[in-house]
Image (tube, rainbow, N blue to C red; front, top):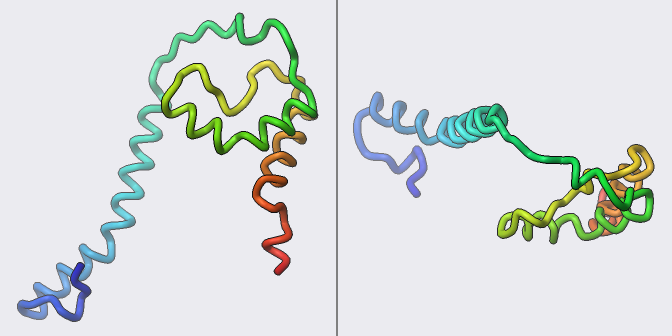
Length: 114
């Protein structure tokens, strides 16, 4: 990819090309954000009742789900039966376990300290 210094043409042409090249990542990010917002408004009809029956996940379930979250996330791209987060959880304790599980997998704050 050419940088702004190597572009041929008049000074006005160089400025317009350089401004487009430097603004392209911002424009792409804005377009992606708009796409996410537009898709979040889609009408989804899910039957959650089966998800809320059965085992209620607590702290230990959240810890385990946090540890396997990156793998579950990739798996969810290929199968609708794989979820990153358990819908049927007990709230705060599940969330605490989930956050700690993700922290255990990524090394926690030890990387930030060094």
